[in-house]
Amino acid sequence: MKKIWKKPILPIASISLASMMFVNAIPETPVQAKLNVQTQVQMKNHLLPLGTPNLQEKRTSMNLAPGVKYTKINRGETSSKDYYTVDVAFVETQKQAKELVGNLKKDGFKNAHIIKESDRAVDDRKKGPLGYIVRIGKYQLEADATELKNKLSEKGYSGLRTVYTGEDGEKTTGPWVVNVLEVDQDRFHGHVVPELANGAVAGKETLTQISDRKDAIAGVNAGYFVMGEKDGTPGDLAGIFASKGQLVSEAINGRSALILSTVKEKANIASVSTSIQATSSDGAVREVDGLNRKPGLIRNCGGVGGDTTTERAKHDFTCKDESELIQYTSVFGEKTESGDGMEVVVNHAGVVGEIRNKRGGAIPSSGSVLAGMGEAAEWLRDHAKLGMKIQVKSKIIGDGKQLKLDQTTSMINGGPRLLENGEISISAVEEGFHWEEDPGFYYRFGERRNPRTLAGIKENGNLLFVTIDGRAPGWSVGANFEESAKVMKSLGAVDAINLDGGGSTTMTVGDDRVTRPSDAAGERPIADGILLVE
Image (cartoon, rainbow, N blue to C red; front, side, top):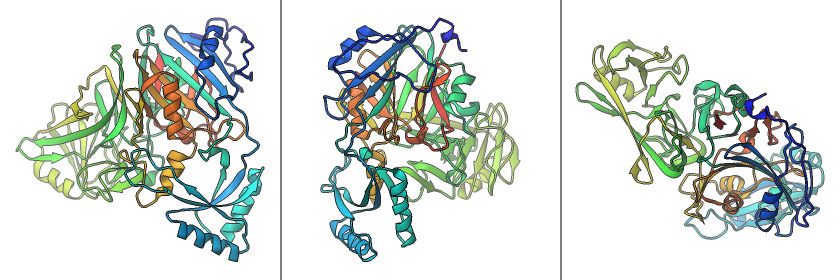
């Protein structure tokens, strides 16, 4: 057991409040706590802005350490009006939707209907409906909707989705399960720090494993990352990551990041970009495209140097570049990514001590490896010869100002920003969560309810880490971007950011996972977590 659990655990107490419903505080885990009655009474008039105001809500709280409070919130109930159905397609125009409904009728599917999706991203300059959903079927059981989807597939329809209407983003009674960690850094004697899975970039690990390995008081999953090999190095941070003064992964330029400090400085959320340059002792200068990742593949885009199809951020998309220069340090793992091109090994002073005519060699514990492909490999051949020096320097810009990176600073990728200076400010288009060629992407990612992991900063500097379970009808329906922003504001945040969600959403308290995984396989292995450690 971890240090925090050495004290006897007190049984849960309760108080009868008309606006509260009483269910098990943390089902399926042994975590129990004495209910903080005073807090519950205080929160009675500040219920979560999820569903209608009259929904029942219960909050249970426990102190994990001085300055650290954990609260579980159960709100609402399953709606009798929600059901399972099949989304046949999301199309841009009403004409396309009507044509699809006509085709469905010809194929014997007569009950299809059209739903206009009016909501666009808050920062979307384009006006009018986002698109139109063609939907068919109404079932109480998911299996029945899946059977219909299979029949449609047999008729040649593709892109089909079995969905639950409670996750549409429209009015529902829920339910919702929300977990909240609040950290008063003036009272908390430990640290809030990011931690890589397995202590390295390459590879993944569940948050439960990461928390257990570091003996964490509590933790949440952190930033976006590469899932599979076709998109790069599995476990690679798909955005900025910095810890203990070391920049480990470059930014998705222009995307928001959470900035933490271990010296009690107020945390910050900023739109971050990175600029990294390699300078040879012969005076030649070359842009370094990235850090500690597979050359040629840029997950979530937002890079430099002629990436295709875009250098703008584009979520869940992998851009490409056949001429990249990548720097590897020992935090990546034992070896660089293999492939065509060349590598040079430099020591801690930047002196080139080894040249390799292909990629995939060992990474020294001190110093680094510069790996090039295409034009970048030619640059290395011309300007990184044995005995020459290569100096690599990076610059981080946050909200237009250069950010200092030292041993006390950490940076974690995320997006979009949800709150700024106490106001809802969702930069979804700016940060690449809207695909111009596929408006359905934003509908599924930002307008529909999904599991969410959120981070926020209160006016007094306290940190908030929040998870909202989702994709679990009858347990918790999740939240969309706007609901997430409203939740964070209601909890007292003045600045807030969306972190990686969906199947990645996880929170641990002591030895226990207090969230319910939405992946059928269970808790998802992730790339990094944010931990509260002593």
